[in-house]
Length: 264
Image 1: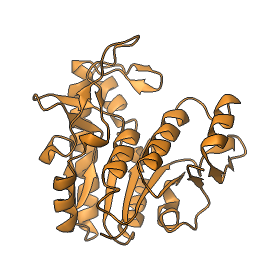
Image 2 (image 1 turned 30 degrees about the horizontal axis):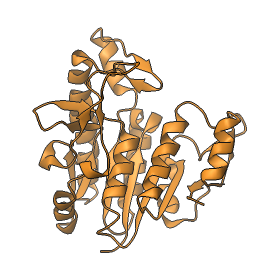
Image 3 (image 1 turned 60 degrees about the vertical axis):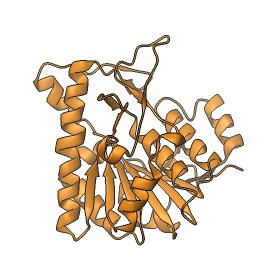
């Protein structure tokens, strides 16, 4: 089949209705089959605090106890996902909101307890992707909109990192498509060498990534995003790009200022 574009949207854009509406309008302009993967922004944390549920993070990832799992299931799978789907429908995009449990599109395993107990967190790999189900949806011209929830096949929902979901989807679908492009969008213009000056690093390969990580220029939350990018490339994904959500149309066409990730 033709080129598939997988876009992951996260960060502050999800919290701002006007910015999110503009992003979804731009996303709708992308040609060909496409999949949207989203996180939850700060909405889950904000609603949780109103309910007396304080968020707990370790290594940049949320600790998901049972109460938090109920919260993110409601917010990610309900409020955030359905608002996105409704907006896309309003601009003639036949979107279909999904968790990993819907159609069994993403089967995960509960993360084993090691030094840290992440609770009801799910880990996925390229074998987790139900390629047949997703291909049927894409062939029917649906636009899958996946939130950051998976399932274990035993009746349990699991909280799963949205960056990882996007990477795994791209890896799993790289075989049936002629080309798969993965685009990570958030509120920064790309991977930055200078956060204050917003200086974008235009190209990063594996060697450059190791150098930037060892020097501390790439750190904290950007590390798992980069690891996911290289994991997708290793599996056969054609291109991975990171950039500002307002540049989605040109990022996908390869003409925007942003960061391109390649293996070599």
